[in-house]
Image (cartoon, rainbow, N blue to C red; front, side):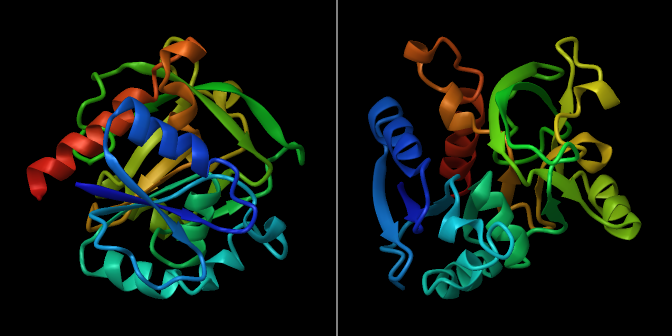
Length: 232
């Protein structure tokens, strides 16, 4: 099982993800440079958080045209596993691999804090090992994290159980007050119809190490690993 973490100019969570996968989960991980085309026979591609190309134009709008995306897009369209976190989520939406878009936070400010989220489906690679109704405390760090989709797309997402996570309060209640960025229907993460491409704004890799006092994100990454091994 080989994981590839893509590094764009401005990525700043790539090392965090590599550390968790390689050091904590003892997996084979390679770094994939944005100008390359070779995916190095990876089984799973991860687009990390950060500010690719300085977030000029729109977050992820330039990275979507990086050379390596010319290979990631067909890889995903053929059923390959791809997971985008924060800026990676934005890139996947810009590339059309995930529905919807990430808009500026409703308060027009950068937000960096722990938030609560709850899985909305357990039939996905990143949620199948999350306990039912478990409230996860996961950090966010973004200025453009307000998920948006039109009414038709939202209906499709809900009907197909493609909403992975919603923001909630500490008791699991999905309320306007627990929504940190104005995301429509409190959506914090979604997957594609084929259930092989995933995106979320919160950072599970920042909540996976005992040294940080929070391992709520570890279950998401372990879900991902366990499911991939099963399907491989």
